[in-house]
Image: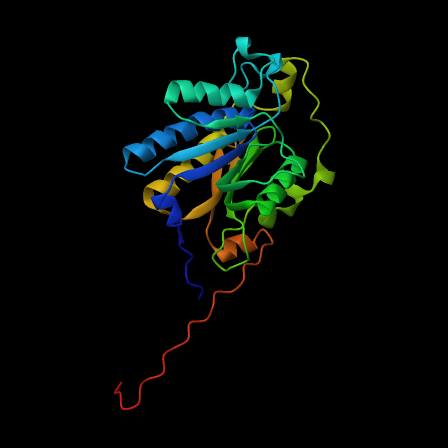
Length: 271
């Protein structure tokens, strides 16, 4: 019988600020970032030494169709999303975060404790994984969605171990295959057209699950699940437990746990 896997927060993230890089400041990113600022304040109030140091990357600007669907206002149209959100949070929440109006590409190196992907294409997700591997990241928190459903997956980079949390590319390789992008990412002509493609609620629903995973990791120091599926059409939220058998159902085979060597009794010892 397999021993249960218990995931614990790295000691470095208990004693030092969390370095978080968020890629994407659109629908999910604009919903997630205010929650991340709330987490920063909660961590500081509970005695964490530094809270969260965040950098946001996105080269997109606000369009009229973003207003109402994403975290932007009519006066924001034409401005960079990353700069708007970070400047707003720095002013209102007292953070000292950084915004870079640029996209992740083949030259990008991401160094962070956690890289958060709030992107809506396989090409962008693949670019994030490669940038994190060129740099140095511990966790990858993927926040992806379609029309009215999506997934949040917290995984780790590094060599395969029986207890390493598989990231989204381990569990769902298709989600990193740019060839399978649908090619329907052209800008919408109106908010009504945009809403015909995507639920008004799905970005917030995904952002809440991502926020809760990070809050649980900080507050309890452990996790019992590392991924969540959200389906607004059925009203269901299904977690994926931290369990090799559960991961195996998605086609990911975790390496077996090392066998503990039993100690040989010393000479003369009684049993």
